[in-house]
Length: 183
Image (cartoon, rainbow, N blue to C red):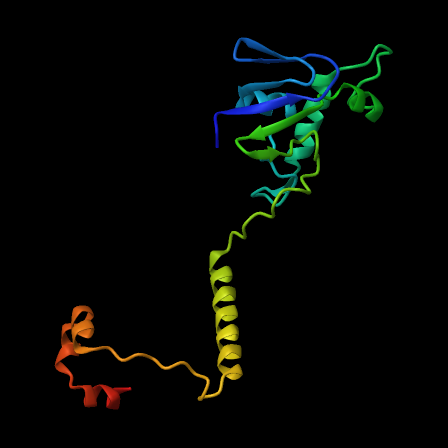
């Protein structure tokens, strides 16, 4: 992942992004290169998942908390209505951006608060995954063998003494007749 990302301002007002004692201003319709952490602060950390089980059995809603933080940053409208409490205020005040990490378009917390576009996390129990994959391989091999008769089975080339001796010196000592008997 890059330390810097590209951000395009899709809104109608200049976008002011403060980070690390610097302010970057991106004019409407223009692109800007900003620090990755700056983008996470202003648009939400897009790598966070919405549901994550804690060690004590409770669930943590990381993306929901990110969205709540962003709504708090958006503040209130001219009538004093908070973006936290009024969705129409949030829709009007939220940053309208397109974020690119290299050649990959990022779906931010603003665009996808529930994280429905994120890939499913990998199962933590690798033993179960390995057993399931081995079972799948065995089933597919069985189907392949069932679908072929002995006449359709491909011929397996015999090793010549030269090639066999490179892989296994003992194989060169076995006579070809003995090799056929071993099979």
